[in-house]
Length: 197
Image (cartoon, rainbow, N blue to C red; front, side, top):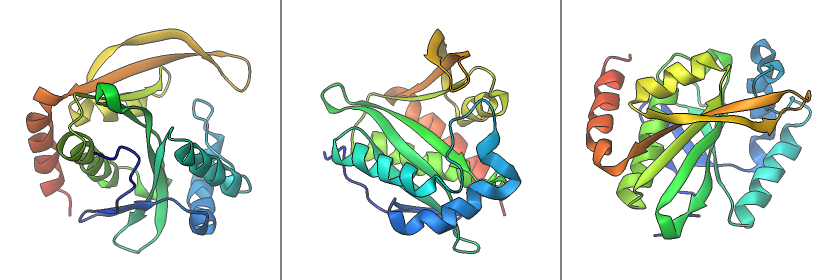
């Protein structure tokens, strides 16, 4: 079980491929849609900062701290986002899915659900995880609703967990899926995606 491997994961709507600096231009365009990078409750790179952000993610991968993928939309072949395995704990068979963002045009299309289905399959079926966490900012209500819609359960709120870029304090909402819930979560995601055209 290689928790740091970055296999290509292929779906009907999206392909997750190992993140590289070669994705810089496409991802800079994707994050520029609707000025997504300027969302106050997220930490997203600007278009000009995309290469540095990718290089930082690749350095974290080299250090054994993260596993980053680019998200490519199948319909037009464009890279439209990023997702990552974080807080990787092979000895405890746990990890977090995070640092995920999608271009505005890819949101609400089923791409996020399919990406999560593939990542959860990787975590539970290939790596035999006992639990997978997903975290988000308390004020990111859309993300909280999307995580709950995946079938994850809210574990709690970490109050004043991070000092944000403007000096405010961030409360982190922690969700998880545990291994005995995975078969039902998988069926729910598959059924939801079956209705996406």
